Each structure stands twice: as structure tokens, then as C-alpha cells.
Image (cartoon, rainbow, N blue to C red):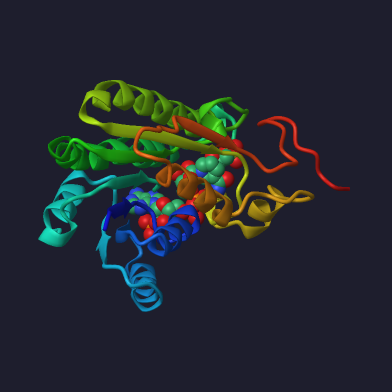
Length: 252
Ligand code: NDP
Ligand code: 8X3
């Protein structure tokens, strides 16, 4: 049985991916900062699927906490086959000159540095195994830059560069590296982006059918179920009503 580690499994994509991978028979390491949600998810996974699950509660921005968490894994979970770097966020949506330095730090520390910390800790085991799959959650924001999103977009452009760099450096060790780049998806993402303003968050998806976390779980399932000789480098996935970052066809 294979083991997957999913960061940010307490909500949205990560939660849906955890359920999907359990359905595919993966043993799981699920992570996030909200202990209660991790506990609930672990209970659900253990009761609905016959897989082994362990939860690790820590902040990916804290390298020592990441290290401690990975070092605490019992032997049965130490061979990680799939790492899904999903934990991430956008904080704020306003012009650069009006936006908040603390928000920049949150985004860079989580989306870029957290991803690096986790990857750095998991890659040595994959090199030892001479196999593995790393999937990074990027975004359409890693492809195009939009107004009021310079730092979030920068963080996802960085994720793309790291993904490509890892692929170049790890190919000789049999490790595949993929990214998934979704457009608008309705999760807790916009609520977090707008600092808890649910009305503003809802307005993001007005007049269209956004992607769901299930759509992203479908995409991850496709990547992890390819044969060993096939690497999916990147999948860009949008709602049918979103042509690109700038053009969305909204119902009146
Ligand atoms: P959610 O807000 O629903 O989920 C985010 C997850 O990340 C939560 O489980 C949260 O857990 C975790 N997380 C955030 N910060 C930290 C941290 N410092 N340490 C540990 N875990 C953390 O958003 P989505 O599911 O939509 O987002 C998942 C990923 O997909 C993100 O990287 C996002 O940038 C990306 N994405 C989202 C899109 C969208 O439109 N929704 C589109 C494209 C990409 P907790 O709070 O418990 O720590
Ligand atoms: C989230 C997608 O374009 O709404 O990564 O910021 S977007």
C-alpha cells in the first residue's frame, strides 16, 4: 500500500483529496493547523475506508515544526510515496500601494517557504527509494498576473519555478513532479482572502459555476493513477465559464 502526505487537509482541496486518495487505498498523513478538523477527518477516514491514517497538526511556515512533525512519524508512515503540497492561501486583494506587508509575509511564508520546507524534508526518503511523486498546488495566478494580486501571483509563479526546478533535479532519481493550476474554485479560499468577509467571498463566484474541491480531487486522481512511465507536468483547470484570469462569462 502506498502512503501520501497531504498538507492543508482540513478544508477545500486538501480535504477532498484526502477522501479521494483513501478511496484509492492510500495510507494517509494529513496535516493542517486546526486540530479539531484533523481529528474529525481522521475519524471519518478510519471509519469509511480501510486505510491507515495519521494526522500532524502544525504550521507549515515554521520549519522546526515541520521537521518535528516529519521526525515524529512512526515507521509505518516513514516511506512517503506521494507528497501533495496543497496548504496555501491568498491574503488580501487590493492594489500594491494599499496592501498590507503582513499579508505578503503570510503568502510567501506559506505558499513558497512552507512548500520548500515540506519538500526538503520528504525528498531524501524519495531519493533513497528512487521513486516518488510530488504534486504542487499552483494556480492560474501562477500563469497570469492580475490587478490587486501581485504577491499571491508572485507566490504561485514561484511555485511553478520550484516545480520545474525539482523536476530537472529529481528526474535521475525516478521522482515525478507535477503541478495543478486551478482557476476559480469555491472553497474557504476567498473567505480567507477577504479576511472573513463572506459577502465579498461569495461575490467572487456570482453568476458562474466555479470549480469544486471534488473537481480538483478528480485531477489529482488522474495524476496519481497514471502508469509509472508517465509524468503529468501540469494541469491547468478552469470553470467552463472562465476563459482566463480576465474573462469570465457570468449569467445576468
Ligand atoms: P482552503 O482555504 O479551503 O484550504 C487551505 C488549506 O491550507 C487549509 O487546510 C489550511 O489549513 C491550510 N493552510 C493554510 N495555511 C497554512 C499554514 N500556515 N500551515 C498549515 N496549513 C495551512 O483553500 P483551497 O483548498 O482552495 O486551497 C488549497 C490550495 O489551492 C492553496 O495552495 C491555494 O492557493 C490553491 N488554489 C486555490 C484556488 C481556489 O480558487 N480555491 C485556485 C487555485 C489554487 P489550516 O487553516 O487548518 O491550517
Ligand atoms: C486562486 C485562483 O485566480 O482566484 O489561486 O486567485 S484566483
